[in-house]
Length: 413
Ligand code: ADP
Ligand code: ASP
Ligand code: MG
Image (cartoon, rainbow, N blue to C red; front, side, top):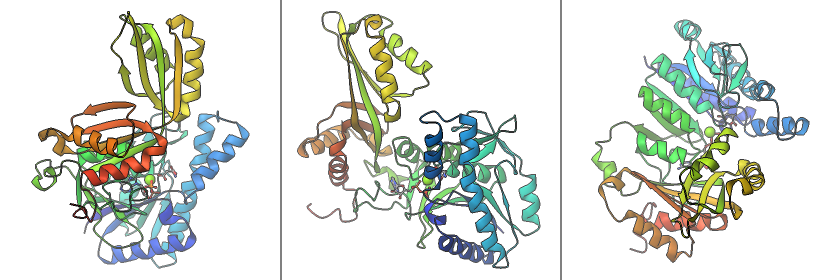
């Protein structure tokens, strides 16, 4: 008998009708003889609603500890409701908050990392034939305070439980039937992938494909957790994340997927002295502000002066802009220019390792579509560009077609 960890996201438990439908699916899985640990998110929209409540009381600066106390309540509702649905179907089941099953984390509120899971309670329930329903997204720190794992963190709860319990598979049920070549909401011709390598999934998640939280993918890679993304609405095999990079089938594709991130902003410090220590004098204090910097470009200097450009999350834009404006003279900069209407668009594929010319296909497709590239960065299996946000959809579709990723790729050939 296999142990499966199944995670259901917000839309999948968005109404009582949906919760009942999930319970029916779990009954069927149990009848197939599986032991089940189920992780659920809050009902869709609930976490946003709670964030807005906090924002109304403490605008832009909710107390981190109290915010986690608040946000963790969303998942507490769904574990209880799903367990009730199971009990009313005659299935023995028990719900637990993250703290109750001792999902222990560090103390970084709102982005805590799981450090340990005590499986005793869960194993005990499983041995008594119960379905164990665990609240995603939350844990407890060493002080006994409630922590949360970052938006989308229920994926990570599920993968961590699957790793700790050595489950046969961790199944992430969501509102799409797998991982697609790009977000199907932006490109309706996107194609579901049967498999994707762990490396590619890690890049896709870190470059903005929120179908899986990046930490969940990291965790799965670290502990080789068999991970699958499936739909809770329609049956199918979904997409399997594989750890076998030998897979020739996958290596034939030059580019496997297109990812994008909307919440980006670009900042340029113009006319600063081109000398040792310049980058540090800008980025050091920004790191101290707890702001993550993503792409960085320093232009070739002229007349001993240079321009230094980087991107940050849009939520941090105003803070960084005013910080740099205040220090403009100290830095010796001529001016600070910002743009918070940009997006990052990326192509991902292990095939890039062995093929030259991918960048030129990308840049040609974007130029044909009239999309201007503001910044470019590459690594072994990805190329990212910064573009104006108004061109995002156009850019995604142009690349999807250029790399023949769609279902009807013969069209136009
Ligand atoms: P859940 O609430 O179940 O965790 P999410 O909204 O976090 O669901 O993730 C599912 C969504 O991810 C999809 O509705 C889809 O719009 C988006 N998405 C982004 N990129 C991709 C991709 N490459 N493949 C599939 N879905 C994607
Ligand atoms: N409810 C949390 C969120 O909306 C966690 C999750 O759904 O994974 O981000
Ligand atoms: Mg999610």
